[in-house]
Length: 300
Image 1 (cartoon, helix red, strand yellow):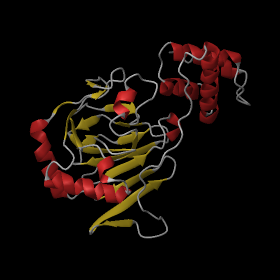
Image 2: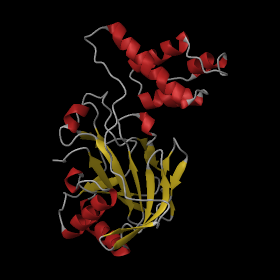
Image 3: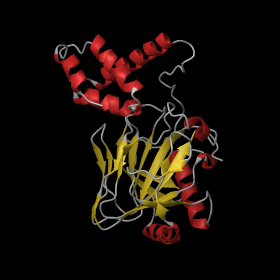
């Protein structure tokens, strides 16, 4: 995909951001060539388009294209918003949330996207115990295979990982219950905790955690509990260098500090949630994290 066409289309209309026929044609060409909506949006933003204008142009253009192709083609639109996890936090009050006697400090809060950074979600001992339990079971991390709904090794994710079954041992059950109460989301709606280890140079390129409805394998994935609606990334150690969690759409960088965590939610499977995020390369030492994903319904 090239941004040249968008640059040309925008050059004569930069003042009022008029959507031209050339731009509509380019959007259709990218979609029919199999380009991801995230990549098309990024190319438009790089070319100088306002994000809201770009999103509207993509949605209207692709809907018109589907109408043109006829009723046999799948019709897609912006998914409706759904309820999401939401910690009981009031910025005007104490920055500490008490979770059954365990104090969790809110270090940062952002409204759009909804992001909170927690201090001390896990104790040092809990971090050490989780790494010890996970270490012998690590293998090359996989990502969702969008075509089948299964999993596959992906060059974008260069870590080792494993999953615990929900409530597998006492430590895991305790942490899962703490998270469920902290973000006010049913325990049974959570996937099993995942532990990842990133060695020097390892990273996870920017991505979204929701399952994109345009992929053929998504329907199969959603059968197990619906969409993902929230994520908690817990840092099990403090790497010697690198390894931050980045949110490119909003310029947020969260440093990986042992025991701390970052939470974010997304009420629809769409780039408008601004929850694009990634794990920056580790430059020295190792980074260990544990991730908890939350679904709309009971995860089976």
